[in-house]
Length: 280
Image (tube, rainbow, N blue to C red; front, side, top):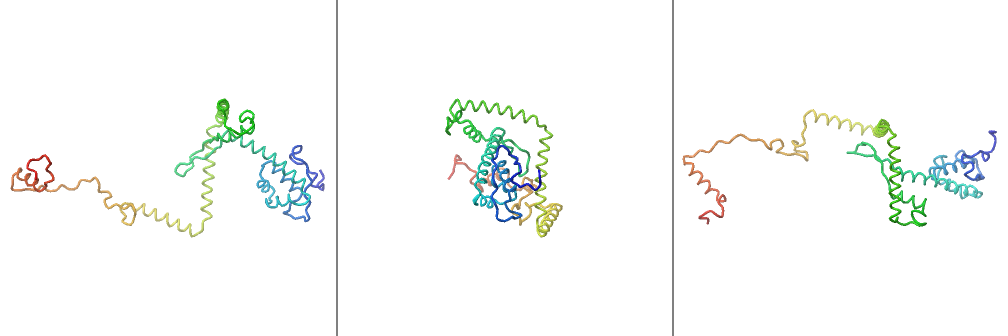
């Protein structure tokens, strides 16, 4: 193809699917403007993603500029191509939603703030929504409503079939692949933490180093918060509970053993019970 040929003659990637359109004429040729090839690339990206924002990012243009371009005089064909691209994009979104409804979504699993693995999360409401919209004559009789007993049994049967297919696909993945996936995610998390620390100011880094040195000094000195009066965990009896103290000397008396017991009872009247005789 001749390099000097106009941009409108370029063959789009979606030949036979997206309608051809005449690009919106521009008064000025700017380096960051909506040139004809940029408009064509935007329509193709819109058909691939179904998102105006994603399509704008693909061509490095703002969403405000895209909507403003569609309102310009002579943008009728561009607007029609826009709507057609959204239709294709919606089909792609439906395919993604159906895939999530059938195969679930992998979500991370954390324990005490640490990533320990992943699990598959299923969304039955999304599955019901997709079934009612793609097969309303079978699952909703042409309108959105709850499944009857037959529909529920059919759904359960389908779920078992899909579950077997998913398990067969999952079994095809080796343990080494799963571990490698977890290692990649852990490494990405570690790199994120290192990047956050690298962007800290010198003052914060200096304070963190001083804190680490102070922690090491306390550890080397055998610091115990229960023995520190200034600490909220201070316990004056820490380390003494449960110990048996030195034995006290026995009290001796010139009185006999029975006399000592009688004196003790008199000094502690609460030792008597209500059944004792002579209680007054």
